[in-house]
Length: 140
Image (tube, rainbow, N blue to C red):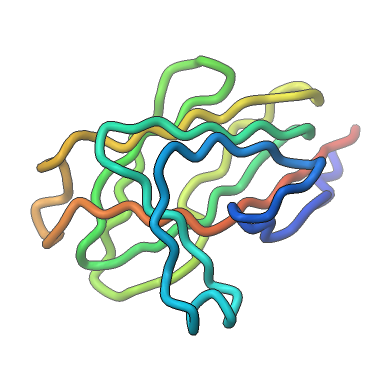
């Protein structure tokens, strides 16, 4: 199977035909960070965000850091997977989750930020800072 990237590092702030976003509440990073291409969307606790894409796979970029919490991610209404964004050393835009490879088509990823107080015991906070997505397609 051949895996091809259709769109790399699509900003969660850019409107385009490839990805439709349903951000419910966002906080925009500092201007210097945005200018450097490291835009983030911080989603409120217990809120849900959707990303709709056409392809076979999606990679989600987000901040891993000492003050990050948990989020869950589900594909097409399936069973959610818990993602822990805690890391002892900051990674401002690494891939934190890659979807399973559903059949090619239109898919919706649902990201839910867990309630206040849910984070790795080593984390100093519950923040979630989303950055961008990669969209892939696969062929036999």
